[in-house]
Length: 448
Image (cartoon, one colour):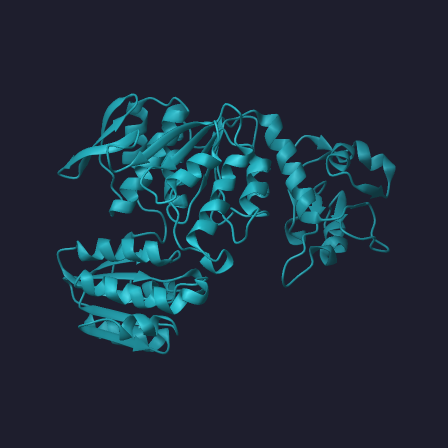
């Protein structure tokens, strides 16, 4: 960060109260955590559901902050910039800082596959410029109106590319994030039921996801799943921007011609590339196609794309293979869950040549149809003939009740774990999945 306090004040249109001699000083870093403040940092107070960051402004100044951005006039607080909204102030600074960098930015949204696609693109770009450090990638769940701006504020002059995720819970969030990031390439992996509680329908989700194109540069490229049921809606939202499509069928610009012995022969507008996608599942093959399409939009050579895709291993908590109890295969897919990703995980387990055990927890944010969605997962399990199913969670009981074969439900994870330990053998393949709030990683930890 190489901006003076006065420059930042102007960017966020705030009213400064304090020592005016400090306005010429350079801000080293921006933080929303008063405990992480270092000397000459700028603190921004953010209001959350359970806390108000403004309450920690005095502590931030005491810890060395040059000034604090707050949303009201706090008496006895030295060196403060008063704004209407701390989140908006953070967004304005991030938007300005990103605009100064000029580096190409790829933004990714979708109901499933965002993180894996991001990791694949990041790997490709790292090979392209022969450095991981020169590619900025948003970390973990830094994909909302706080996380994304914080990610963009980490852009350094030495970096050549940025790859970020954009998540949402409500209409308008993606549009806001897209305007801040102003992407060169915008990717929509797919439209599923994730967060349907807040949108009422999949079409509502599709419209919200399509907002990613609102901030896309005039000469930017939209990357869209050609086989998604809302392809036409997404294409229309991209307006007159250049579009590269991906999918398994030949309708797509980037598609699979054939797969032989685990090697996919992928046709692209720049020719044929043979890639071995090490991540399991058809959905991960689609993620690879999205990554290839996005990389082609940046004019990355096919040889480099191949190296980047093939170097990807497992993303933590996403179909991550581990050695489990008694030497069994344990597949950790506990990062999150919705109906589409649950079905994809079941497909992966169904294709394993061993004794299969599925351990599941509730899927969250599914609204009025939550029970219906869980019942449908039971039917999908039956279709794939997975005989051993174990579950916990109020909604998961509907899955278990609709399962055939040996399906058991437990009120708590402790009892579930005790039961599973009696079932696991050397030739077992155990897959664990559930939404974030279920903390199904506790089951994985107990079985590794």
